Length: 133
Image (tube, rainbow, N blue to C red; front, side, top):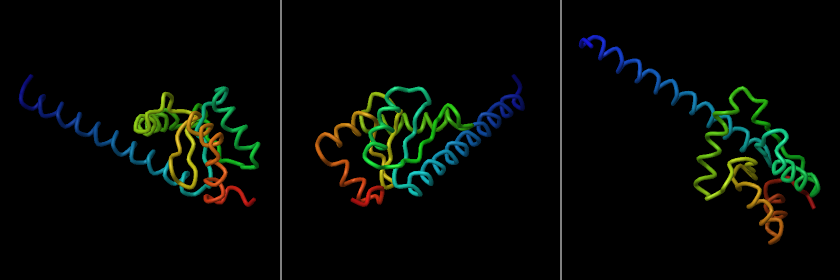
């Protein structure tokens, strides 16, 4: 490899990394916009039983969450990767379903159900403006 070829490879890798970072930034902005623009957002995969449970729990409480089915989204894989990072920070086992309430990442199905059982879910939903009881 000549010096020019080596430099070209470095430039191509740098450009590729920059494009990847720009795409991740756009995905982050989209998730941030969705989470902050809606009282409750559920990121799921259609046909996922745990996503179904999360949505049914919220619907049963009278909440109409914004639902994003990642397998039907153009950037679904990238959003899933971002949610995996968020879930890892909360020591969750699965990145989806991922629930945001009041613009904040609540967690997955385990956290949602735990909050429901311990009585903290309804106050969170009220504070976010998702319930008016």
